[in-house]
Image 1 (cartoon, rainbow, N blue to C red):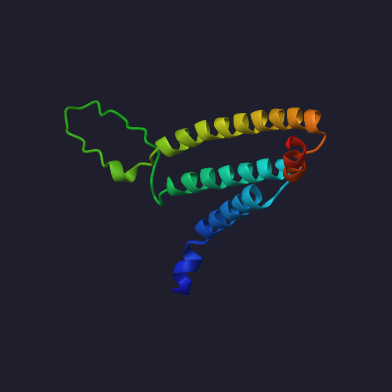
Image 2 (cartoon, helix red, strand yellow):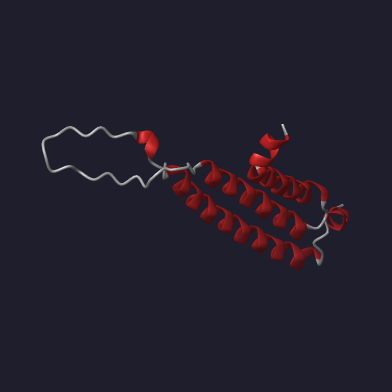
Length: 126
């Protein structure tokens, strides 16, 4: 059992990062800390998907055409799947965009309420 847990150490790292980000989003009252927690959570998800796309002894998905008339069987299991990597590049762009928009909104909130503490903002709204 211990060997199984140790062999999957990367998944434990991702779970730890996700829980740190989740705690920051839920448990903290400062809005900047919530945004940083969201960014940590998104980073953990991206790392998880990239790690699941790797295979041992796999090669790049570049198929060379044979010039002869002989039949060549392609084994798809021996190639890496590039789709998760491409999707995670898109997710990184979305993550950076989300961070930029969230920070712009936080600047507006700070200019209006002169604080970024959630409790103080809720008190000022009453």
